[in-house]
Image: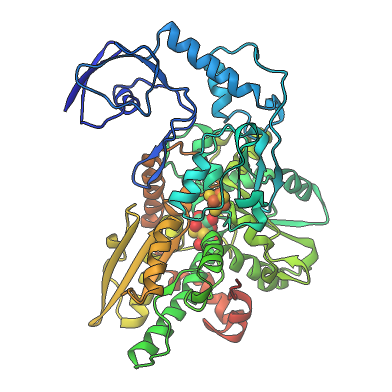
Length: 580
Ligand code: HC1
Ligand code: SF4
């Protein structure tokens, strides 16, 4: 233990603690632009490159970066002397000298950490501006907009993409004034191995990486009298949307969200959770089919089966593990199952021609935008889900439409595609898809009713979790991983024949969808992820039905249209293929 003084505070910290960490413990907020440390999910970046966090250390001539200087016994640190404040201001002014000053039209305006610091440091002029700006690329992909003019070289995106996700799509290239962060050989993101997980967007402090915005297109569709516009909302959105309106993390806003969507003018407000229940019917049937074959001695059966509802994860295994494409479940994601059923079964029932029907999704995810665009999810060029907007985009729309969100009362989803069980709700957190599958697989396999539907063993935020479930004497081994780095380790074990699991759930984002790249920014606080996960478990616990196979509207869908899980119609509408 080490005792030191920071400003007026005496504090004791463990050996190895940095000044930044020690200061934060005492409630002193030393500003920084590059540092990030999200405990519990290993999102970390500490290149000590921005030099915004400098402090004075008694006895040292130079200012020290607080994020890279370890505390020593008896150290005296000053975090807010005039010298420190002036140094920080000059550093910020130098960053601004190579930055386009288009804050008013920047998509990050109001949420930009550089803008916040300019305000905090009382920057009222740009003394170093007027010189040349470094030449950098712009790119618009299906999910992400890259505007590298705005990049400040904090390297957060690079750390997240390389170390957490192990995708390696972003890195520093060229030198000096011409340095930029880009895929190797300055390729476009669309030509790289980027999965569109959006985790780089979620940590970018400025407007260099932002989501592709579809809100103007949506407003035009909502105004068009010839179109029927319906919406589906992903499980994780309800657990985070309230944060954009000042509500504490973990506030469930399901009913208010439905009300707001009606106010915006959607013709029908449905729930992706309905399709999550449908996913369990199809994926559960696949699990049972493979397990039965395995138990009957079929040596050709491919195990473990991997979940397939996360599009960034699908993209990842298509790029990085082309030899394992026959392992994942072929079930489409709930987003796509919803679109497929909406534009066939539901549209036929309602007498709405496909070309008039617009299906929009509200997702915590940026890869969902890319998923909507995949060719295999289109009929004659018409997508099953027309486009997806993120939780952040929805919040902006609600504000733009002058809807007093916090004052709204609760409204219910429309039927039939708004009805879901608790199993569908928990899809939004890591472990939730597996838990939902276990609830149905256990009951269908054993023929017994579960006394307790809570599979606590698969919950939590540990990067990889495992559990053994007793199925009438057969030990079903399941695994859960979130974050693509954790997924990679499991896949490498499978490739090398060292994997003992029968079924594995993988979500690309740390925390699962609750930590998606389109969610309100959690700025490195893992408490926020816990609060969002608990909110979903609360909604699940309060539902009268908690097992997907008990959803009465799903039963009707099979009776009226699909026949049974894995039927020819179900295979055609609800399953997919993978490509490398
Ligand atoms: Fe997800 Fe899913 S849980 S992928 O994380 O399977 O985005 O929330 O909608 O499709 O249901 C996201 C969330 C979401 C799908 C479902
Ligand atoms: Fe890497 Fe994900 Fe960003 Fe693509 S979206 S560059 S995979 S972090």
